Amino acid sequence: MTMANFTPIVWAKQMLFDFEQAAIARNLVNTEYEGEAKSGNTVRINTGAEIEIKDYKTGVLLDEDDNPISRTTAPDDISSTKQDLLIDQEKSFDFRVDDIDRAQAAGDLGGYTVNAGQGLATDADQFIFAMISGANAHLTPSAITTGDQAFNILRDLRKALGKAKVPAANRVAVMNAEFEALLLSADSKITNVDRSGSPAGLREASLGRLLGMDLFTSENLPVTAKPQILAWYKPAVAFVSQIDEIEPMRDQNKFADRLRGLHVYGGKVIRTAGVKGWTAS
Image 1 (cartoon, rainbow, N blue to C red):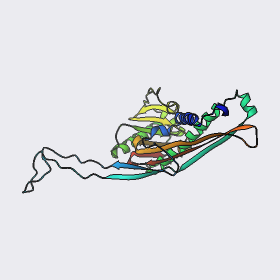
Image 2: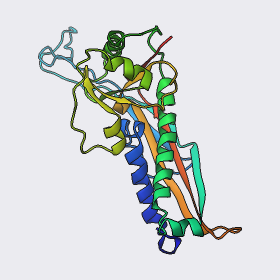
Image 3: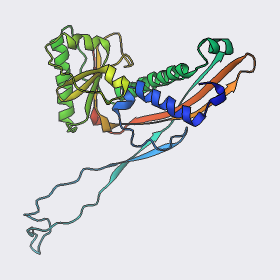
Image 4: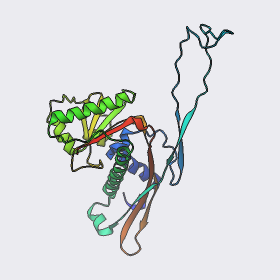
């Protein structure tokens, strides 16, 4: 890529692709509300209430003696919980490459844009993990030193999600390297799974599947010095993201090409019961 043939829309799409390929957390959450993301926008999310299931054979309508009339039904008024997701995060990149350096690199700036995309992915992952970690009270902290203890923590997270009536499908867990090292030392029976169609970040971070959860590892969790693990139901966490601006220019003070861009995003845990976590004491 040189500035002479730089097309902002094309390269914004390429950088978004690089971002998605490098991201872990962004690929493990709900992005259905993404749409047209602009800084300062608010995405209104409606979460439907539970639907009551009734016995049709017994019936719900009453006769004049207040006895149920069999095989009758009546509609319920439903309500939804409205939540606002604010797109309030703005992160930029801005770099320049001297003409001499560019010539030595065969005139290609593509590698720099890949690095920028990876940097945006790291920033977004840290935001999402911190949001998930802060959304719900963690399980009671404890000190662990063995793989079996790490396995038991994962078991307890599964139990906590189950008690909260979180659907069994679409459960994931992400752990830091400290927790990963302990878990892998256990007879945890982690099974390898085919992630050939997944983004690169997920493929490289995947540990397999255990106790009904897809497991991943990342050092972008809030805690890295001691074992930490977060588990959640994917639809419980919403994330909206857009590379809003990307533009090339010549540097004013040097013989160099300059490239800058803006990434805007926001997130919200829309079902707090669907996220759980644990951090070592």
